[in-house]
Structure formats: C-alpha cells, structure tokens
Image (tube, rainbow, N blue to C red):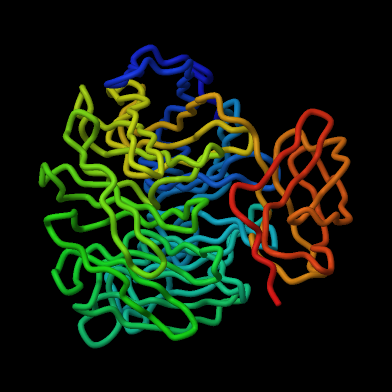
Amino acid sequence: MNKDSSVMRACSLFLLWAAGPTLSAQTFITLHNFAGPEGSAPNAVLVQGIDGNFYGTAFGGGSNGSGTIYKITPSGVLTTIYNFCSLSGCADGLNPQNQLILGADGAFYGTTDAGGTSTACSGGCGTVYRFKNGILTTLHSFELTDGETPQAGLVQGIDGNFYGTTQFGGPPTSSGTLYEITPTGDLTTLANFDDSGYLTYSSLILATDGNLYGTTHTGGVNGGGTVYKLGSSGLTTLYSFNGTVGYNPSAGLAEGTDGNFYGTTDLGGTTPFDGTIFKITPTGTYTTLHDFDLVDGSRPLTIPGMVLGTDGNFYGTTSFGGLAGLGTIFEITPSGTLTVLGIFRGPDGELPVTGLIQGTEGAFYGTTPQGGATGLGTVFKLSTGLGPFVQPVPTWAAAGSHIRILGTNLTGATSVTFNGLAASFTVVSGSEITTTVPEGATRGVVQVVTPAATLSSKLPFHVLP
C-alpha cells in the first residue's frame, strides 16, 4: 500500500477567482502525488466503485513501467492493485489511457492502448479487459483488422454489452473502428470509420433515450470532426464541425437534464486556438455556448469531457490557459454562463487531459498527468458545496431486474422509489443498496430516503420494456 505523505494538503497555490461575482467558499485538496512505483501520468478520469472508493489507471510507472490500476480513498490513501505488462510479451496490455467503467456485474472494464497477443502491430494493438477482485482478464486483443489503439473507454449499452472505438485499424483506410463486445469477450465490428469521421479519443455515452452518442476528432463534411449517434438504424452523423463554431473535439458528450448534449472542441471559436463549449440536440441542432479566450482556459482536450453536477450545471477542465497557462477548472450553466473555479499552477498539478467525476457525496475528483510534488501527476478533490446524490448501476433495466444504487451514508435508508413507485431493497453498506426495479415502474428519477436526506439520481432511470 502506498500512502501519500501529503494527503489532505490544502493547496494554497490553487487560486480561486472569477471575472464577476465573488465565488462561494470552495476547497481544493491535493489527495496524492504520484511517485512512479505506484504509477505515473494518470491520464484517465476516475470512477467510483461499489465500496465508495475511486479507481483509475496510470499510463506509465508501476513495477513494470507500463502503467497501473489503482484505488484511492476519498481521504487520499492510494493502493496499486494491478501492474500492466505482468504477462510475457505484455499479453495483458500496457499503457492504459482511458477510464475504467463499473459494469452491471460489479466488475470494472477498460482498454489499453497497446499490448495484447497480436503481432500485427509493433508492441501489440491494444486490449479490452475485465478487472475484479484483483484479477485482470483480457477479453480481447485487437488484430489491426478489427482495430488498433483503443484509447477511448467503454460504455455499457442497454443490451448489457459494451461499446467502444479504436483510433486506428479496420478496413479500408485504417481510420478506426466502432465495436461491440460481450462481457465474455465476443467482439463484433459495427462500423469502420472513414472520411465521414475518424480519430475517436473519447468514449461513447448511453443517453436516456437508449441510443449511444459520440464524437470524432477529424473528418466529416468540413474535416473538423463530427457528432454521431449509434441507434437501431446504425451510425448517423448529427453534425460536422467547422472552424467558425469550433472544431476537432477530443472530448465526448455529457447529457443534460434537458435531454440535450453538451461538449467541447479543442480549437475554433472567436480565438481560434482556444476552443469552445457547445450544446447539440438529439436531432442535431447546434449552439455555441462559450468561446474560451485563454484567460478563462484554452484547449479543453480533457477526456471523456464535462460532467453533469447535481445543480444541473456542467463541470470540466481545460488543458491550457488560465493565469499560469497550465489549465483551469470551470463551471458552465446550460445557458452558457461560465465561471472559472480555479487555475493550476504546477505544484498542485498541471495540464489536465482528463475531466472530472462527481463523487456521490457531492465533491469533484480529477487527475493531472504532470505536476505535483514529484512532477509525475496528481489526484485532486474540489468541493464546491454541492449536495450528495445516488447513482443507479446500471442506469437502465427492465421491471423485476436487480440493480445497485451507489451513494454515501446510505445506512438506515427507509425508502427507495423509481419515479415515485416504491421498491424493495437491501442496504448492503453505507455506499451500496441492492434493489429490484418494481413492476409498473416508468422512466424517472430514482430516490433514496435516509435519516439525513432524500437523495436523487442526476438523470432519469431508463426502464426497459
């Protein structure tokens, strides 16, 4: 177990400021400074586990120098739980660069950029893996013909299978693939990207309408990338970016409480090298919400993108800009009002390339791949005063299905409802409830009543037929 000596160090070098009204009280804490043996360059956003702790991957470091999977508690105690390239020839993968996701079965699923058993790529074409209870199982090694470099993470669809993309590989132009993989490892290529959109860095999202949505960094009618939908009718391009409104999105999308999607572009806008924030409807109507201007941030390269907060606003990071030029943390309303919550200055981390996650107690957590006390990256926590919530896993199920509800301080819960309809449940721990979707349940918010509060899910739960 590796315990950071500077856990809970209040970072006075993280300057909180805004061009406008005075900010409410906020607290920024560096939870961990990576040192190398437990991992370095944490390029992936965190995910909260069933136990209430956070899990992530580091691109490098570890006992084999090829990256790690780690666990970190909300108070900052970090434990390395897997070292990549532990098998001969790195058959288990190396250099993970995107987030783990928590599957409906309680296991984590993820991808590695390289490694695996294929000899078609130098160093391997990458892998898809399952991780649970300290055991990593490689589900698939890419072979170039079905994809290469799956930098994007996975999302679990309403059918229980996982969906992802690769940056390269696939016929006829090796411009990447979109694939489906079962929990047991059967992979099907659904589409081969081409000039209509290619180079996918960020994972798809499962929207409350049951469809999957994503972005490509390049391609499309104008060459500046696209927003696309994967539904029952296949792959559909919703929007092609151009330089006037922003272009080259690395980040994926976040769904708002209004059913629309929100995202960022790396470049474009009124200052062409700083990027934008946009809104797009499920039918493709596009609106620019904000143009970054270097002072409030620049190049929102962060993957998987912005995160929806419990207040209905979106929270994210930029990789550059701010007073020190090393990145910012921002909040933006669905109508486009942006507030800078903080800037990175180096000792507290720098140049973030990942987004944020909101823990179920309300605070935001993130990583930086550089900076910190060692220069090898950090894990940080930002508290803005937002309240706790609950997260159903999965966010979809048919009536009669057993699911988990994650939260904080759930002990003593007296009620669980699906859109107002009571459900039977069992409190497993302070961070987990198991429940059954009641017969007659309809699409809507999941609520848990505890002795301290009534906790709601951020988005509606999708009840399958």
